[in-house]
Length: 122
Image (cartoon, rainbow, N blue to C red; front, side, top):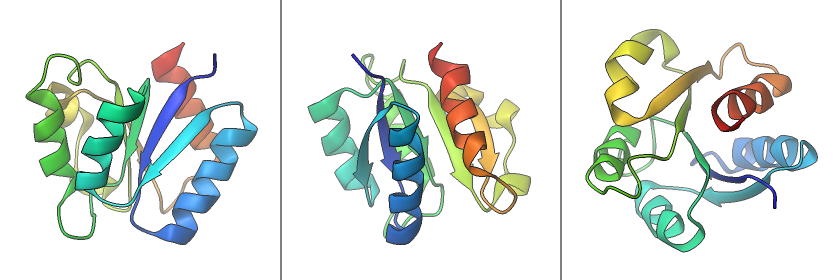
């Protein structure tokens, strides 16, 4: 059974690109465009890892991180932050929310996302 990835990204073009990269690497990917859809997807698919953009339409990724930490079954899901605001957040500060890696969108290459998922699931 392949690793289930929930990709929370409101930029449709980027979500399709990232999803394609992850699927080619053998992951099963579900995409949610905002925090509400992400919560519904977490309940439905029970992902092995969540890739989260912090700057989402309507609600921030921080709200989703808080929500995930409020339930025992979701607080154990590793989270990878994939954001253009990487310089403004620190792994140390976000570790309490289950964040295991931060990927900077502005400088990442496709293999960075796959490496990040591998690092938290294997």
